[in-house]
Length: 93
Image 1 (spheres, helix red, strand yellow):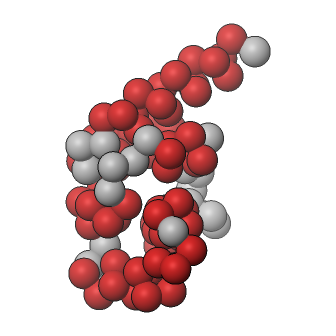
Image 2 (cartoon, helix red, strand yellow; image 1 turned 120 degrees about the vertical axis):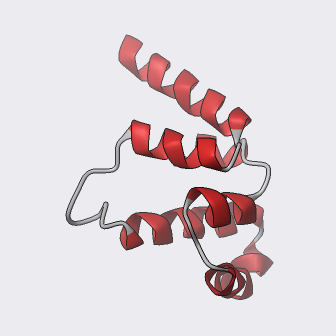
Image 3 (spheres, rainbow, N blue to C red; image 1 turned 120 degrees about the horizontal axis):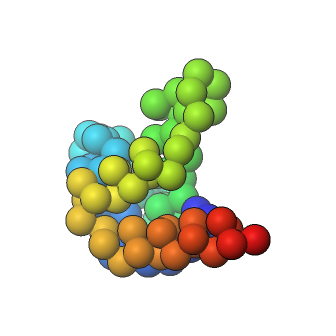
């Protein structure tokens, strides 16, 4: 599911800033560490950092609703559409 969302993102930096609430310093750190590996890796690492910061790994589950809210804040409408389509497909299985 994460791969589908990332593939439809327009800007991982904007999503990290607005959707995930990252500071410019956090974004610069991610860029420095992962930019040579490309857009997809930067977006994925930002996503991982967000779920770790929010405690989704240990204290609470990450729901589709939480992800939709973050994408909506960042106006990542294509990624939202992709996530909804993926969720509908998984419901049909």
